[in-house]
Image (cartoon, rainbow, N blue to C red; front, side):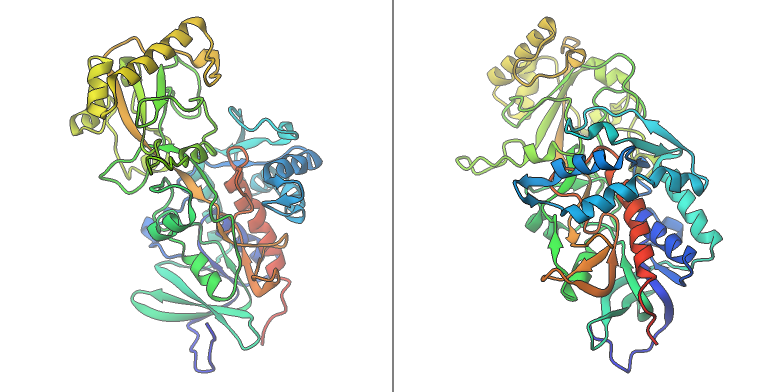
Amino acid sequence: MLATNQVEWSHAAEIIVVGFGAAGAVSGITAHDLGAEVLILEKQPANNHISTSHMSAGIFVCPSDVPAAITYMEHLTSANEGLYWTNREITQVWAEYMSQNKEWIEKLGGKVKLRVAWGEHNVPGQESIKSYYVLGLGRGLMRLLKGHVESRSIPVLYRTTADKLLTNTDGEVIGVRAQSEGKETHIRASRAVIMTTGGFEFDEEMKLNYLPVHPTYFAGSPANTGDGIRMAQEVGASLWHMNCCSASLMLKSPEFPIALGPNFNGSPGFARAGTPCGYIIVDKYGRRYTNEVFKRHTVYYELASFDSYSLEYPRVPSYWIFDQRRIKAGPLPLMYYGPMLYRLFKWSKDNSAELNKGWIIHGDTVEELAHQLKIAPSILRKTVQDYNAFCKQEEDPQFHRPPPSLVPLNEPPLFAVALWPGGPNTQGGPRRNQKGQILDTEGRPVPRLYGAGELGSVYGRLYPQAGGNIGECIAFGRIAGENAVTEQKLP
């Protein structure tokens, strides 16, 4: 949107950061520490500010070996020979800056621990990809970052929803139009605007048009409605990775807009210890279709298998089937997930409330459960019988599930709960280069416009192991902040 000479600027700073999650905080801190005047805009109110970073597990990737990490990312981003989801210049800077993440967080005073990885990609360079988590999880991470924003006296304008990027006659981004307390306001940036507004997890039309399967339910902040994508498009930005997301199978309560992560084994926190619980996942016809010990960030794509004969997605919804052992193990959702941490949603400790509401279906026999799920009893019976046989022989010839996870379903009654496509977040948005500059449709930087974090993430079809996006927020927040301050200041 062209800013005319009649525009009245209500606020001004050298760097305007739009969005106050991890990427926004890191961008602001970095730009400030390099001598720039920074102003952060956030659409949520201060007393109820919960970003997707807040709701995360606070895990971030920090490679131990840069060349090996480059090899790893090149394997994940290669579509075919010579064609990559993410170009090699970005892969190089990704590996270099990501390898500094732990040191950067610790310099801020953050306490981190190494996370033991499981079920990650087995590709060359994997051994270099280390994940750490901040003590206090996502809340702890954001408490740390917000504390540093406050200690630097970086102003944050809450309840300020940016809706337009303002440009001059040369096409340079020189500010932002926003809505604040019902009034239109114009905020000037004399060096650059950094977009860190997250994805489009809660914009149904964008999800319908860009993601491979609908519905898809997400577990992040409902404030992520694609604002930054639309703003960047209006000034000519090119989009990438719009059909990509970090997603899996999720619980979805009809009473709550945010999806919940299922805790299949019943172990608390990140633990995999304790007595494992038997379970299977079946499609709407009662057939297993995947190794249930799947990669939580990528199994989503298996759910997008469309049957062109029946004209449906046979795996939407899927059903998580388990016995009394899992009911006794505790709540079905992961209780460290964002909605639980913030008490946005409550789930009963013994699952009784959800059973009474009909969210969890149960049957004394396989046949009774099948009838309630509208599945042919003979098909579900055979699926359970085959699975129990695999448990007895300690081998799953169908999907090669790890033997330690093969626990039989032999403590009736049986239970089932619907699982839907969904997960932490989308990856798509405005394309950026290795400097964090947002690019137009011809691959040229949109002057004075930068991006970081989940908005136009560098990840394509395959997401790296847990902590990829938070790691990217820390790395590309620094990259965007460092490069934005080098822009010549406008008069």
